[in-house]
Length: 240
Image 1 (cartoon, rainbow, N blue to C red):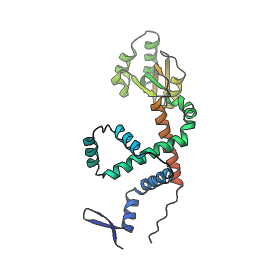
Image 2: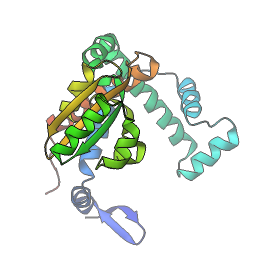
Image 3: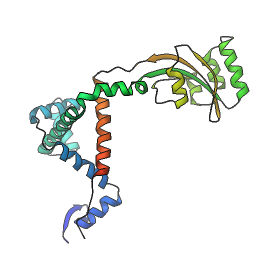
């Protein structure tokens, strides 16, 4: 069987190439890209507009910058144009497929997208946790000072302050507590695994349905679709 690809001193025939793709776990990525190509095959985009958008997104303002990027990525001019066109088709495919439902999807996901800034102290000693809670709640001592002195996690370095992070980031129990908290609300020691945690909501930052969020959720739906479609796509070697 004759070679179809040469890399350095290695010449690969079609069977060896397929074996290498499988061996190095590159075949699933190839299948993904083919699934995308099939999905966008019928989509039309203006080539020049696609190229302008492509360069703008990469801050390639001048022709010299574009040529340097092209050389750095070992692309011909035509390949760069085709890459830009493919990106534009994918963006249009996302919009045509999920654009009409993206706002309702945002509302479904909003609870986990809202962000919180909160303070945390954790210790494995339940007696210490109770003492710290009373010192915070009854004596009005500084949360930051007590966290630096007594918290046993990395949050001690920031005076117990964490965030802003999305509500899906903390432990689910902490996330539920914060989701129903008012700013400044202090929670008594709560056992979570081996820890006893004291939390206080500092600030609630609701998620905004802006262009950045819209694009993020569109990408999320696209990735879910791509994963499911790829897994359902039959791959059959035709080389015996």
